[in-house]
Length: 80
Image (tube, rainbow, N blue to C red):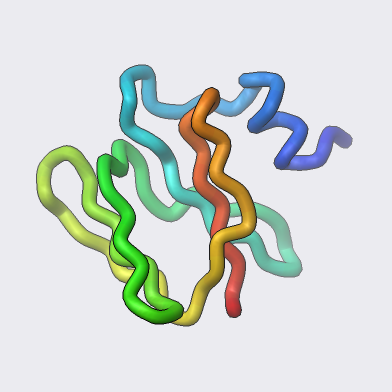
C-alpha cells in the first residue's frame, strides 16, 4: 500500500481541480478528508481555521501541520 504522503507527491489523490486545496486529518486509523475547496488557512495558536471558496469555515482544534503539498493541493494536519 502506498503511503498517503507519497500519493500527495505523485498526484494520485483526487483533489480540487483549481487552486483550492483539500484539508486532511491524520490519526491512528488513517488519513481522512475534512474539507474541500479550501482557499485560506489561518493558525490561531494550535487551532487551524479553514475557509473555503464560499466563505464556509471549519475550525480544527489542537492541531499542527504535518504536510502541505502545493503541487497536489493537499494539506495534512495531525492532533497536537
